[in-house]
Length: 199
Length: 199
Image (tube, rainbow over all chains, first blue to last red):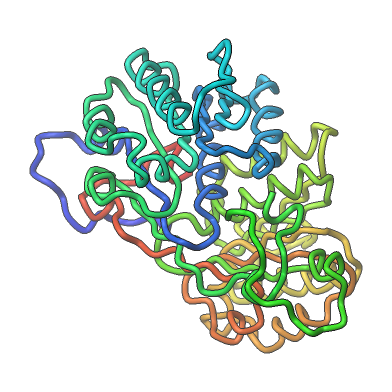
């Protein structure tokens, strides 16, 4: 985004600095490509600020996005920026001892419970809740509860949520919402996904 | 993007593998946030593949995107993935000895000339031409010439171009086009950009 003057100066009693540093809820939704890559691009900025970053991947398969995971793990371990904790539903959340019998629905809910605990404890400064729009859309996790927990989160914690079909209540609560609209995708022309592009 | 079957199997005489590994032209356009962050997210995948990455930033100010630059420089120097070369118009292209008298228009054109040289030499496997849609939109760089050079590029080189107002001829030539549509942005609510989010 280009630098610029805000179009409205709100009458909210905050200084520009306070308003500027207000923690954000960002949502990347829509059917186009770029929702997750843009979230991980934001994580690079957070890393550069030295912030602790928590990634929660709400997807069954861990195949996709291995590139982002390896890059952020290397960055987190470099000692030059922020730390990176990476949590995957697809491999069973790391804090769960045995998840053998857990359904996807229960696993998604358990992931959200951990996010709530981390928000309350202010564990991270930037949260990437990748594909988290799906469990809300499917009704596995209650959107109103998510919105309430996000609204009440303490301190200065940014939260980025990705996925198609972001529920309207989440969009309403968010500060920054981008709809990634598909204009053209190689799959439409019969091309399958390829390494370096899709993962 | 979810894994899936392509909707059409083209009659182009290529094997699935050949078709899969066809080099792509990707365009991230639209007025919403996420165009550049998604391009740098893609660069993480390229890095993970061990590919040489060339970033060309076609912007006057180098202030924004310092997070991505530092992260990709650390990754490129880590020896664990691909290499990263980062070229900035804002600081005078690195290959120019003296750019004191160069206008933005000339500098943009010179950046494109270097991209053409690198494409011909197959210097990189992934090119991020950040904000390159602007010099095309403004007529500083001829879009038809860009499209021709991209179409004729040898080998297996992916090119990602970002920026608002991507010219239609570029969109037509691209394999993957996402329009980042703004649903909501903090600036609309009077909030200025903040570190870790906008840079």
